[in-house]
Figure: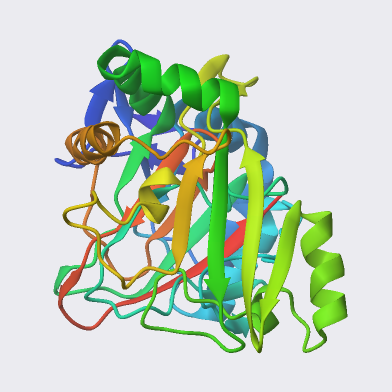
Length: 327
């Protein structure tokens, strides 16, 4: 399908059909060869149409465009004109690369990162995410995506009582943060990088603005956030969404629980999160997701309210995925 004279919509075998045959995610390629300036100009010229497509489909994968470096990626992000969202209070270890571009997550690449909406554990979260493939994996390392309203609907059907409690009470998040980043965890940011300061008092002030209470334990700190809403209503799509950090914070049942997590969850009323509900949730997410293998130069734009994303373990290096967050 040809769109707007510059972009053409193409199909990928991994896509899934939803809502009367609409493919998820959208995949766009250039109609003819172009340079980076041409791509940026097309983004600006067709911005209303791209915004509408993102709202309808949840994710746009731009494939086959001449984006070859972090600086190119930064120019593409800038062309969209979205305000930058800053990662204050963020839970992952990230490093600035250039301009608005950061590493996506610095935990070991062979580690799986469960599905999540970016910064769903905070009241101030980005509405859009960009990812860029600087180096494509030879195997594994995909960034799967899944529509959040589908997870909500299937969970409500499977576990109506748990979902009702989640809607009523929300979720309380607790994270143990060390002074410095712990890159062995995918939620391993230290409090200094999370709150962008070396001063405990400043960290407390910045945390408080995000609804987070800090309890100091020597140089470490316990960060307590919430209760935060576990289910949200997306006004644009007019649907309820599974907007929470349950999957990324869940550490397993009482019999399989590991001690290598630094984040803990409970319902807002103090009840533990249902193991059976979480096990089904993780299964449903995997069943419903789409994982298109990365190609060098790919740029993926994600509506953070509509879509959860994750990371599959890297099987064969290299892999370099960069990210940018937008309001």
